[in-house]
Image (cartoon, rainbow, N blue to C red; front, side, top):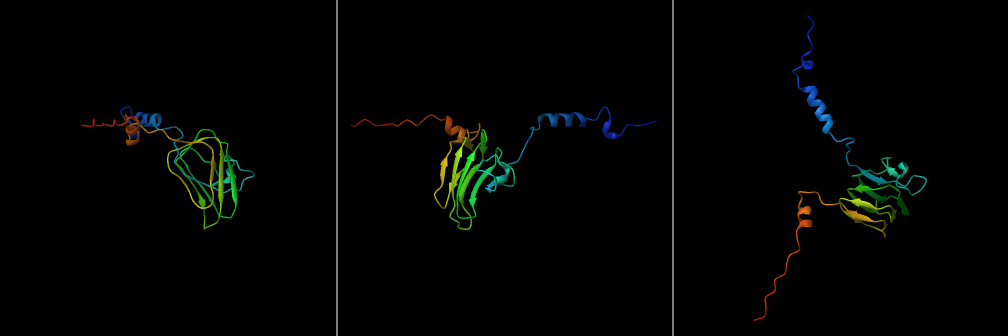
Length: 154
């Protein structure tokens, strides 16, 4: 008599559990990374993988870092659509006097925007990310403004 292996029996719940897990797992789940501007591409486009280290354009959730290692003015152009980043840092590495100009399509930032060193120019719209339900930021956004109480002069 040929027996089925233990894990393939009709009363084994693992195939259903695996199917359920695969159904609820986010499709294309990714992890946030840091995208460092390298400027080695043939132009200033954010979609050019050669302009970034590692060599891939920024994706949603990434932190963007624009650090100049050489004294230079860097002009960049965001040609990506609906990019949502976790923050932006503009500055210089090793004291190099680098300045950056960011222009192009609007982005949404879930984090801080910092600038250091030389003059930095941001010529694209940056919107704050909407507050997530159940967070203190969402509660503050929904809270009506405080009323001032004034006492009548006696």
